[in-house]
Image 1: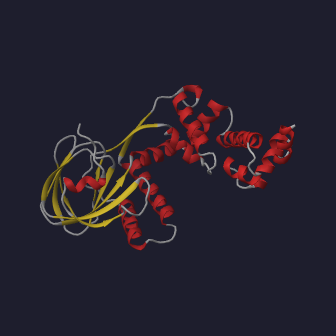
Image 2 (image 1 turned 90 degrees about the horizontal axis):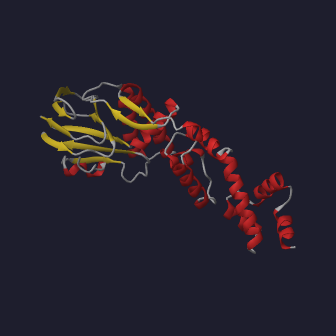
Image 3 (image 1 turned 180 degrees about the vertical axis):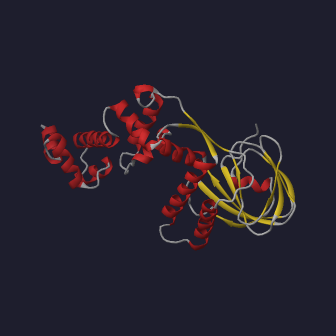
Length: 295
């Protein structure tokens, strides 16, 4: 199989005029591009991401071949085509058209699928569907296109919410999902546990979310929570607090940094937060702990 291409590389194989693009919008795991295409017959290498094609102006006869026989449909504005990732495809259309491409990463669909099924996902694949009339997908793509034009407040949250709705609709109706084999009662694998441990240590001074840590292990948040407890014996939040507490103890003992600086380096919200954690877990204050360590 040829090397997979990124969405922004597609014009090398399918020349067209770019009408709209989210390239500079800072979106995560989703990209949108609109094109004007002249009648063409093209080959598309395997793509890195899943692609939805929403048809705008210009009805056209469309032929497509992916992994199977040629499909033929007459496409009109409002129709949508789906193309799974990592598959070669051939397309032929006979009229000028304007289309909007929505690209979704495998990570996004797999994460959404993992949360829907509460299981670890091995692979997601879209069915070979050339023509659908799906108002939910059509309106979702239109909303994302409008977001690029308007740049409203809270745009990234809005885009993530719409993208998640689109993913759920795709997974319910147009996708097949392969699950990973059960890893048994041991929880996170040694490799997953090591990646998560190292990530926590490197980012201890940052606010770490459950979703963020689950992404490091490449599993859903709910599954990560259970597997983390099985591996480490405590919930992720409790583990992070333990690591921050140990970091603060070491800095108090081995450095002359001010307590305010130590609280920041250890990842506490502020000095008062660190003091409360010390009193809860050690029965003392940071100042008292430092004085005791110097004796």
